Length: 152
Picture 1: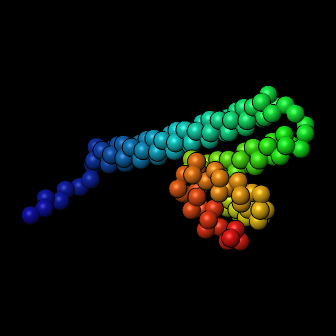
Picture 2: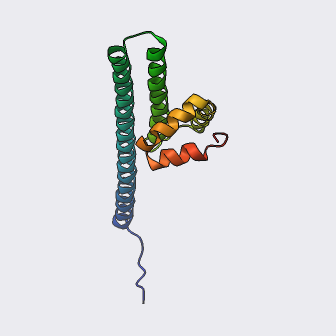
Picture 3: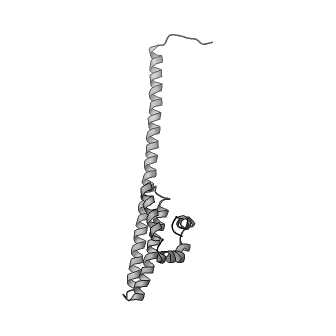
């Protein structure tokens, strides 16, 4: 059934060559996997950076709008600026929430953002502004805010 013959030097060389080729494929596969992981991480970092730039630019535009179109310092002007600022603040937390879809934030950072939002939403002025603007945010963020303990 089997024809067993003595192992020759050529047979050993063939076995060693086969092992080297298999090892080369293994290391090539690991290198390719590392390159793909690096590319995915770079893409996520670029997305997070772009998202951050959008947040910063949006906030700056809102501040400029407040300065240009609500120039007075009377009580009515200040109250209107405060309402707009509360909307900007809620938008900041919404952006941080949505950023979680792009970049995995550390657990401690998520807990801090959750606690900050929970404390913020205890203020009546903020809750009133939330009711006014919540329809502008994603369903996921609305659910997150309304499910966050201590907000009601």
